[in-house]
Length: 290
Ligand code: HSE
Image 1 (cartoon, helix red, strand yellow):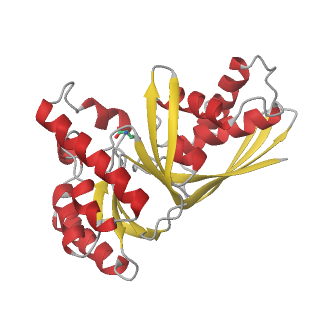
Image 2 (tube, rainbow, N blue to C red):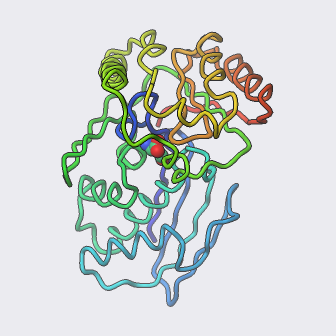
């Protein structure tokens, strides 16, 4: 019997489009054992729209890994207990990819190390910003150099809480990527590059007061505002309510605010209020970084 829990993740953290992310203490739990035929049992909070057959992403990922390492596929009985909401910008597909790879690797006797698994995960996802923290934990920066990845863990247990505000709409990553312009201006590149540098330094040195500036972005958040009514205003309201900084989580619709202890409820209430004024009901969770 193999068991793994894979955390929800928040990608981008503002300016770090496709390269920065963090793991949250909210998990999907996966159990797998060899069986006579493929069997997928779905449990937990979010089970609808997850296929319980060979189209299941976790299973498809496991098969992909076995094919890559030339390992004869074998049927599994998989139990997935799902608590990470799908299509909300919290890395639910990454939990399936990372979970599928870890299980398949374990069944094959663990021939691949963590970096190799990360490279396969990133190839499947198309970008490493969710799979990297899902596999390594903490706050991560991952550099892609052709097919090689250089993952860096910037902090493991930062001294702030994450408030995640989850609007009651679904945003498919493909659509949220499709609306981004193909090129950005030099001014915006400089704006984002300087803030990624500041963000990395602020996380390492625990200088969280810099996060209000360091989480600013010009290359994807506002461009996605049409998909999430009230998002830019809700992010600003988080900082005014006392958050260190706030960002769109992945491709949305979830927003994430980095909060000093004790201010989480007020920040959550303020952000939810702004979204509600824009006709968008939401729920909020306060989570630790994993
Ligand atoms: N970096 C990706 C994006 C994350 O923003 O499109 C999506 O999961």
